[in-house]
Structure formats: C-alpha cells, structure tokens
Length: 107
Image (cartoon, rainbow, N blue to C red):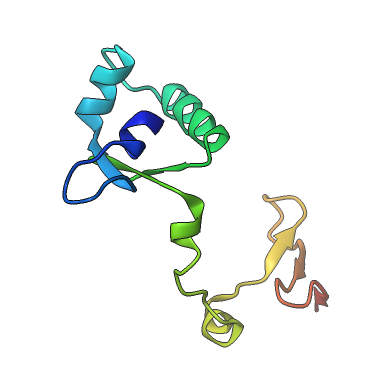
C-alpha cells in the first residue's frame, strides 16, 4: 500500500489515495477483512509514515501532514456539548460528578 502511494495515477505523480474495501481484501488475500487485519495494516502504514482512514466503503491512505490543515474545534464551540462525568456505582445513580472542563467536583 505504501508502494501504491508512491505510484503515479489519477493526474498525480504520487500521494494520498482511496482504495475500496473489496480491493484491500483482495490485496491482503483474505476472504473477510476482520478489524484485526485492518489494524495490522494501519500499524504497518504508520511505520511507513502514512495513516489509514476507514470510511466504511473505502479507505484513505495519506500522510498525517495532510490532516494537519483540518480546522480545530475551539473551546467556546465545544462548551455547550460538555456533560459532567459521573463516577461511582452505575446502579446507584448518585455517583460523584466531575466537570470535563475544570475536572472539579460538581455538587
């Protein structure tokens, strides 16, 4: 898969590409793509300086630097979605609550 990254196709001399799940299955020679196989491929690609992104029907192989330009969500946008985390016996319903933002106990 790293060799495919370096090959010329699709109007580019090399670079990120997408590959159908069926094609990855054929490359691995497996009748079924189990999650462990996908994880092994992803781990190997990381060693090659690439990342594997699972998009259900296909995979994307890309260098991590291509993902660096994706916008980061600022705290003020995340704030309305924060929920306290409860610790304690899940059957009790009276566990201690902690705020994700401040990691302080909420009364």
